[in-house]
Amino acid sequence: MAAYGPPALDENSPPIPGLIGTSKAMQHVYRLTRLVARSNACVLLLGETGTGKELIATAVHRLSNRSSGPYVKVNCGALSESLLESELFGHVRGAFTGAVNNRIGRFEAAHTGTLFLDEINSTTLHLQVKLLRVLQEQEFERVGDTQTQRVDTRVIAASNRDLLAEVEAERFREDLYWRLNVVPIVIPPLRLRREDIPDLVHYFLYHYGKANDRNELHVHSEAYAALQDYHWPGNVRELQNYVERAVVMAEGDELTLDLLPDTLTGKARPRQGQIRGVDLDTLVAEVVQQGLAAAGPAAEDLHERIVNRVEKELIVQVLNGCNRVQTKTANRLGINRNTLHKKLKDYAIEDVDEP
Image 1 (cartoon, rainbow, N blue to C red):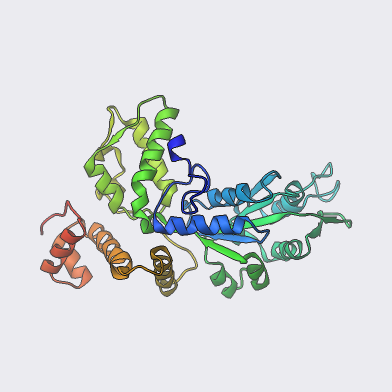
Image 2 (cartoon, rainbow, N blue to C red; image 1 turned 135 degrees about the vertical axis):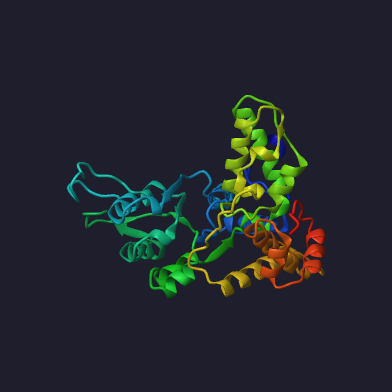
């Protein structure tokens, strides 16, 4: 896997092994990661499930001056409020039923290092008050204790929801939001960085080929086309799952179309991804912002980079919803069939049934 390791001095390259992709969108993420790693500021990672937020958090820690300290990870969505409070801040003996010994929490365990709080949007308002205090004052009390503990812990938080929308819905404290959101890094969904799919596929083919003691599979052109056209609601994690399955199930040395799920090949209705707490206007604005940032200030093909990509995605999804029949698809899109036929050709969308 050394071939996928990042060149050390290229700020546009992946900062750590395991981060795959050279698209403009990911290069922007890599540059931000390197910049923020030099500071002690809080970092807020935003992105859909499966985009790789934990890998970026790991990169921030490894590139920081805290890299020799502990790196502690907590999934806030996996624990109830009472358990999460004890997990983060620790407890003293007798604090609650089952607390038979004193126990330090994750903030203390990460002292002089980094604490990664995944799914920070899952925390309750009560717990958010304690989080705000430790972020501002670097101090807290263990559950059931009156003695104040002081720590030097950097916090990286991640959310798969729009936290500002959560603030407006009164599910997330605004003061905590601004305390966390010192440096936000938005990790783009896979559908907005399709040029990275070939590298990701080869990376996972190599990894799972080695894990299963078999040679790396070659990818058939039809399978590649299907992988490129799919909208990837589960992002990189979904791609990883499908590649691992193909490696396990393949009888030959080629990843063929029949090894991919029906939802991906168009034989079954695809699952629609849901970005919770985000309205359409916000999504459109974020897509445009992400496209502009990825293109850079000198780009002169913004319509092709952004509008054409969105239009292709719309056509692909409506096409799949109409069982890939052109007449139905054109009616749903509100365009005539000749226009649709031209767009299918321009965007290299193939395997469409005639009416």
